[in-house]
Structures are given as C-alpha cells and as structure tokens.
Amino acid sequence: MSISTRFRALISETEQLMESHGRQTNDDQGRALRELEKGLQQLEPFEETVGEIPQNKLVKELSQPLLRTHASYDRGRLMFEEMGDQATAAKLWALEQKIYRLLNDL
Image 1 (cartoon, helix red, strand yellow):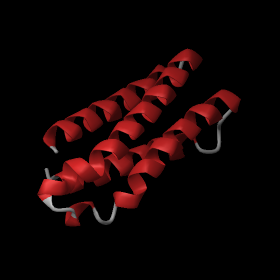
Image 2: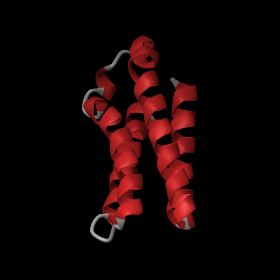
Image 3: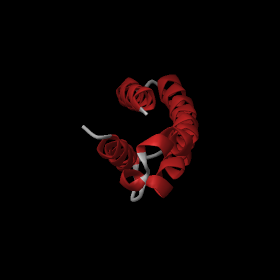
C-alpha cells in the first residue's frame, strides 16, 4: 500500500472513531476527542496533496505533522484509558502504531 493511501486511511479511521463518539460524549470524552481533533488538524492539510509530494521530500513534509498527531492521539488514548474505555484506547493504540509504521517507511 502506498504512503499516500495509508496516510489517507489514517485520516479516515480517525474520523470514523470520532464520529462513533460524536453525540454521546461527556466532559471527559469531549476532552479526549479534542485531542484527536488536534491530531487530525495536523494531517488534514496534506490529505489531498500527499500523493503529489516527491519521494525525497516526504520526510521533511510529513514527519512533524505525524509526530504531533501521534502525541495528540497518545494523550487522547491515555484519557480514554483513565475513563475505562479500553475499546477506544485500543483503537487509538492501533492508529498510533500505523503512524509509527508510516514514519518508518518515509
């Protein structure tokens, strides 16, 4: 799978996870979802253009947004764990692992 496809899939999976919690949030969930939103905001500017970035510039263009997204997702995951929502925490952990693999492949 290409980097651009995996990048877009990461955005899509995050959006789906956020939508699944959308209307049934309490204050703690709201804070955790805001962390996911922060991470998503780092990625969205590149969603359409990621496939147009030359291979030799991928590291420069995508590393920092991916690292910031990972940090936000990690904070969100810890919040969900504290709330006892292990299922969502596990989904976020899987997304974090996808970010690591994507970074390694840049």
